[in-house]
Image (spheres, helix red, strand yellow):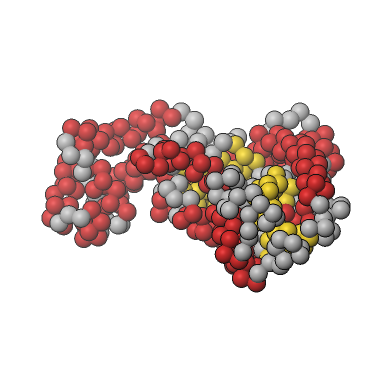
Length: 413
């Protein structure tokens, strides 16, 4: 569990710090304090800093403060603290406060009478304490999510001592940041690591803010390119609320993370701690579907999986591979030897619910061309699109093939 801007405001001895804007983002995690010495901060912060602006080493007029506010948001800092007094920055301009509020950036005012050494020592001490506490909390939650414990009662006692609210039923959200490799292609390659770091920080910060609005928040579990959130969820209404909020979150992140993309899988709701591992398995299956089907707009719930749930329960993956080969093998082989048009035609035909005109429009070809391809598909596979059993086999084979490219998970016992 990280130290938030709200926690900083509540630290003993820092009561003279005052919030001037950005109340909605007070949950932003603070990684460490940073005193800005230069005209701008874009090249000097990595995300998560609480940035202090003194005006001692550089004049801070309204234009410069507006620049710092915008850069603080772009660089995903936790917030901005402006020191005010008679000698340097007399007051925070109204436009700066309004801009911070518009952009959702916590903006704090610190009088010069409150010494920086007092502030940084208080924050540094709190950060060490929170990191130790957060590490213990994360360890307990990771054990529950992995089902890796000998005694549930002992683990729950430890959770109580760490003030983890586990009496509230939960829903697991598994989020993945994909397309990282695109950050290292072409002209942007030199900045790839910085962009990846910024996107991770932006995603984690935005997800943390979303969780704060739900109440009873538990720490995020970070695993490489994945984040696990345990959402409070006691019934179907909470499931609908969680899905709506997370869908809005993905929509807001879509443009900010380009060319990367966040995708998310949701378990069912109402899980007590002893079923967290089961819920994580459900979220993993839903995440695979979210990645395999872009039309789902990056989010899928376990209760939306349908036949995918059955496919994930098949432990012998060779059965699925043989089914795909028997059903689609001739088409895949033909596409590998010639221009690959048959499999895209098949996908378009099913996507448009057997409407030849719409499928042709989707592929940008004449309807007669599409009709010829359909006849060739039937000839190669020995299937008839007029036969409902054949259509079912082909649609399931297509489903397996798409899912397999995103590592169809095994079901959780």
